Image 1 (tube, rainbow, N blue to C red):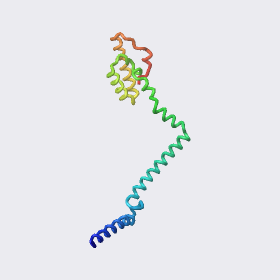
Image 2 (image 1 turned 60 degrees about the vertical axis):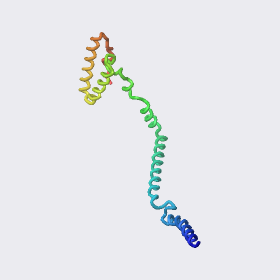
Image 3 (image 1 turned 120 degrees about the vertical axis):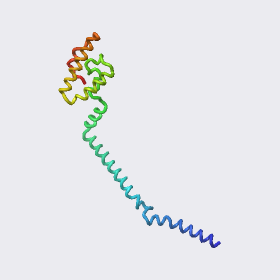
Image 4 (image 1 turned 180 degrees about the vertical axis):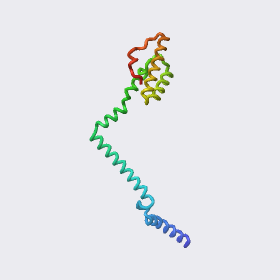
Length: 147
């Protein structure tokens, strides 16, 4: 009976002292190893809050900037609206030829001399093709810049 009472007292002592050792190490009150991580999370949250606050202030002070940003996001550039209409003789070209044309134009667009030469060669090629197919290419398209 004494053994059972001794073991019970020992278990009770362990149960009482275990939480006290955690408090003594600082774990029970939010101190110790968890503290730097918590501080980093708080600081990160604070920087997010500051960034959002500054963004809101800018939106209030300069609403035109938001309108410009929204317009840029929702409207495609004018050249994208042209599609195949910007390519001289597009009605005589296959989809593969139009894609190849766009790729070649993209490669020479930085050099205006090469670009002009490429566009002239393309125009001649389309005029020859139009004669072969008895098609009439619109003269207005000759003056257009191809996109």
